[in-house]
Image (tube, rainbow, N blue to C red; front, side):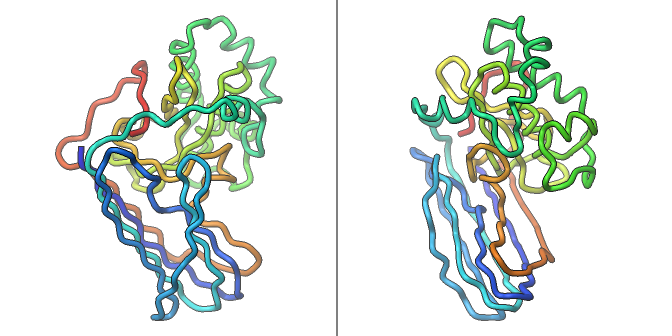
Amino acid sequence: MRREVGVELQVEITEPTLLEFQIAVAPHPGTEVTERLSFVLDGEPIEPEEISGPHGTRVHTMPAATGTLAVQYSAAIEGRTAPPPVTAYDLLAYRRPSRYAEADKFYGFAATEFGSYADSATLLERVSSWVGTRLNYVPGSSDPIDGAVDTLLSGAGVCRDFAHLVVALLRAVNVPARMVSVYAPGLYPMDFHAVVEAFIEGHWRVVDGTLLAPRSSLVRIATGRDAADTAFLTNHGGTISLDKLLVTAVVDGDLPGDSIDDLVSIG
């Protein structure tokens, strides 16, 4: 499989600040990856610092003066990588409640809804289906500070809201789960996408309650507890506005099929 992904951003900076970008694909061992990344502020190139985060997450950070910052990134990935490694620490950390996935508020509810499914693969399918059928995908319906409880009560959200609710429910029944930002060929409308990885039968398996893109085509960007760890742009201190966001993600040939009861890993 060959996948081509990219993004163009334009950020207006009205007060000097420190910016973080998580837009570059994570390392894909065993594949051939070619990429280009540029940051240009009012016509002058900026060289960011690249910081390696958990699970291959790559953070590009820079102090930025006032002006218009143009960001361009593109990558081509030839082939697929193996399922990500599993560590003992991950299995502890991704059972804990977090800022946007308040698993501790769902213990009783999740036990009642899903506690009877002893088979982990069936549990994964049931949680994904439950979230997908009870939430409406409505762009603009949620606030950036909404967590899983807010999403459940409102009954609507976007991909990050679906992912937070899936993560919270899985952690509430003692299944390690984490959030992954991805490029998603086949997604409509095209944007950055948020999905979930759950530890099932010895591997990290991907769950997408929205069912908006085939899971085997996804390309990993950032991985963490929730959206606080995986945001494509984070601003520290100054004032900015995002004036342009154009994401692209395609595969060479036909999109692969997908079925909710298949166990799939991001590769």
